[in-house]
Length: 151
Image (cartoon, rainbow, N blue to C red; front, side, top):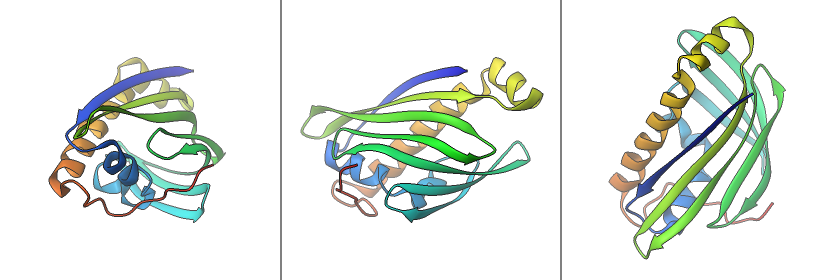
């Protein structure tokens, strides 16, 4: 099992960063390799990915969601095994630290080698940087939506 911990500071309030992160169907805008996400229920998402030419599909269940604080998930079906949490930390009224913690179980030789070479770590860093660009380019209060329910 691989463990990844990465964070980034974004120049938007915590509510703006959190609201955008709850819009799972928009993840392909900033997550490399994510082709499509379908929000099937308030707590179940279906992911279609293609990383280095390898396509995969899986379902992830939101296990905890607290507005402006955290979103946690675990995979429940499909070709990927992972669990993670993203937490949101208010730095000041206009800045937020977004922290990703991910436990990933590489499947097969290609995943294992890619993980050992740091591919997954670099992917996480790149996705957080693209999230920063995405949310900051929209401006404060211009996230694509929000889910404020608690799980």
